[in-house]
Amino acid sequence: MPQNLLILGGTTEASSLAHLISKTNLKATISYAGRVERISQQPIPKRIGGFGGATGLASYILAERITHLVDATHPFAAQMSENAIAASKMTGIPLIALTRPPWQPKAGDNWHQVSDITHAVSFLSQEPLRVMLAIGRMHLAAFYDNQQHFYLLRLVDLPKTPPLFSNQIIEVARGPFTAAQDAALLSHHKINLIVAKNAGGSGSYAKIEAARQLGIHVLMIKRPVIRNRQELYNLGDVIDWLG
Image (tube, rainbow, N blue to C red; front, side, top):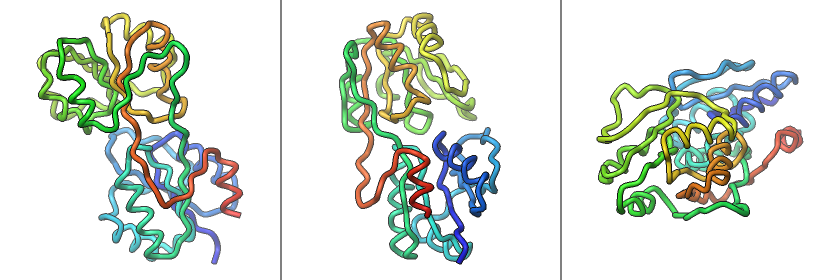
């Protein structure tokens, strides 16, 4: 059977793989969850929306005669990654994860690392701070109990329902950003704490570099551990895996 690749996308790595695949004779589709309104154009067919859990993904794989599955979702999209693992087992279709190593603290960084969003919320139960809440929009409501802080929110799309922080500013922008741009943003809003997910990669690292330059503290949320899968970190290795 000719190779027919399904890429679970939403990251720069997924887009880069799609562009590389488009220059080959391989057939491929890239799938998006549909959580952002402006989805990048791709040189291969794309689909938008959920599958209906692991069983739905398995049904799609069989119906579309998918031969290889690449999980190139965000490192914090743990449920989708778990569904991919389960669907691979159900169908017998080989799975690889294209991801990035997590960031590691460097000299000059001032990180406090926590295991998840819940612990990040607990950490913010303190005196008022000026916080850049750089976690995306899905988990903003978890922080509503800590209304004592000023929050700077940078989002890809303007939410249909505005976040309910009593003191907030929303910046609608799509990266990547430079360290100089983020340093200017942080300085302008007098930010003294960044809350960030350890996404890894270069696309969203500028704020971490800017925090180092400015001496700003970072509350770093560790990424979820996803077991029982093989992980690759560069495109060439994925092409080799496809054979």
